[in-house]
Image (tube, rainbow, N blue to C red; front, side, top):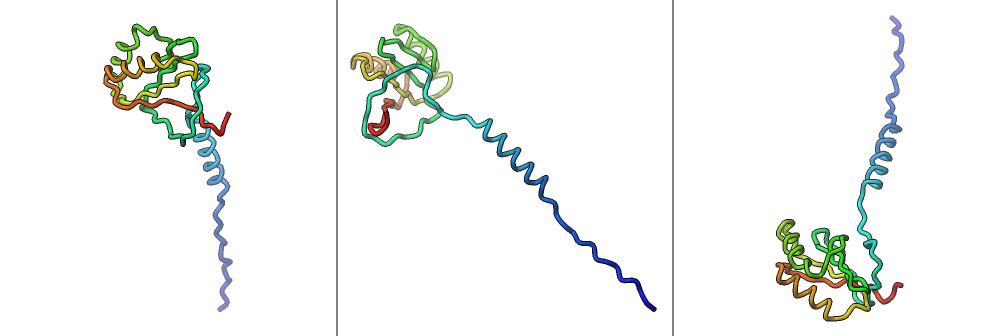
Amino acid sequence: MRFKKREAKRLSLDITPLIDVIFLLLIFFMVSTTFISSPGIKVNLPKASVKSKTIKPDSIEIVITEKNKLYLEGKTIEKEKFGATLAYLQKKSKRKNLIIRADGNVRHKDVVYIMDTAKQAGIQRLSIAVTPKDTQ
């Protein structure tokens, strides 16, 4: 008896849909990722020869412009209301770090006032933002 030989089917795996899904995921993560950027408030930070550390997202940020205008978390605030607002914000969010972005021409006593008020509000760590010397 002669049997007909069956041809063995060749199995192949089409990876085109897999590549499409991977590219879509890559595009999704690239678009949805948040980047830490400098605030929109123009401040001429002093220069220092220090290594930059990453900014922790759980930090409160205060900006002092050259004209002594205060911005707490990007919103203008009066100097008289700063202490109470900072204490409320710190208790509400439980954030213990404060980043001070003071213009290089701001008087020293204004920065000291911010630091003193922050300590009274319960802030435990203070950081002063600077620009590295090797960049402009």
